[in-house]
Length: 153
Ligand code: 4NP
Image 1 (cartoon, rainbow, N blue to C red):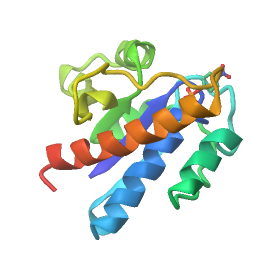
Image 2: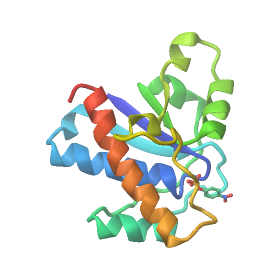
Image 3: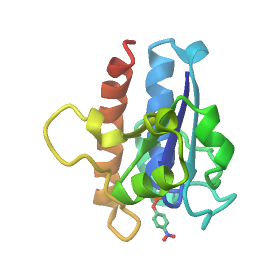
Image 4: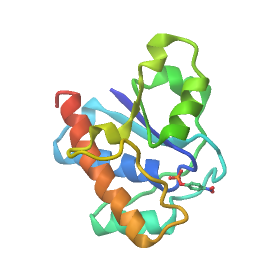
């Protein structure tokens, strides 16, 4: 199963989601079943490590983020089984690149997998405070559990 997390810059939300999901998969001993990556729709931060605030809050949960930011490639849309976007803008951008209905069906808003009621987006913390980064971390951990359940694991 190939899973791709997508946001705008690939330095805050999608690397946090990638790290949280990767960590959960490891805890559940499911590593052999998954290929997991993340990317951004923009390429603004190509080659960079995640934002220091993203890395700090992940590390507090024992998750080290070593991913390097990369831009979404057209081939990703075919190669991955799940395209998990963080917000409506990501959704619109990704869907605009796809003609085939079957490929469009691979796009999901990651926050749809949250446990409680609430927004179906993971809000962009880039211009926010460390508290906003903590909220993103909590949300992507919660959504990771929901997504894994959705997959029947
Ligand atoms: P991300 O956050 O999409 O969660 O990685 C952002 C990171 C950088 C920018 C915007 C959002 N930026 O404008 O540089």
